[in-house]
Image 1 (cartoon, rainbow, N blue to C red):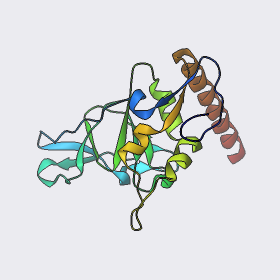
Image 2 (spheres, helix red, strand yellow):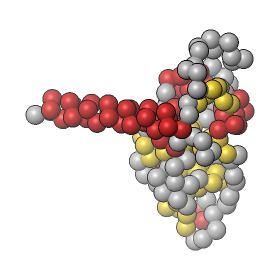
Image 3 (cartoon, rainbow, N blue to C red):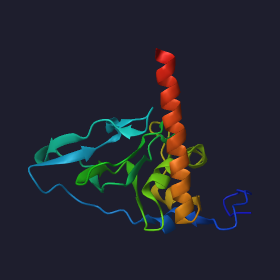
Amino acid sequence: TCDNGHKWKLPQSWCWAKGRQIFLPMKSTKPHNDEFLYIDIDSIDNKRQIINKIKSIKTANAPSRASRYTQKGDVVFSMVRPYLRNIAKVSVDGCIASTGFYVCSPIDDLNSEYCYYLMISDYVVTGLNQFMKGDNSPSINKSHIDEWLFPLPPFPEQQRIVQKIEKLFSLLDHIKKSLEV
């Protein structure tokens, strides 16, 4: 039994790991050049969990919340109304994200694709929703993700899981396309 109430047994080579054990500490940064690339909640397509539009903003007009450092391969997870699933993988370097996001920068033992699929899973989203507080903009905070228990398989198993998920999504896309004809 885990200390967060989960009674699931993991395969022998897997372990439970807290967010703070598998994600690098978040870094703060401020825009340096005349313009910068900004990811806010509005940038996310929450139906497909992708970044739909990265905004180019003049530094002079930078929102006060523009201070989360991101790099390619990170996963941004909105802490505001997490049930809306504003979650996406960062596909380019040099972006600054809103402080409304928890930036999941995977440690070396965590495959970035596995991290992405884990963060969009019902296990994580539904689990973290229980911590929401507030009426106008119900939110979770950084410590909820830092302390959440994540199932962590060995790296080769993470790669196998990602390959299987992507194969199934490819098959689903093929089926959808064939139904449109």
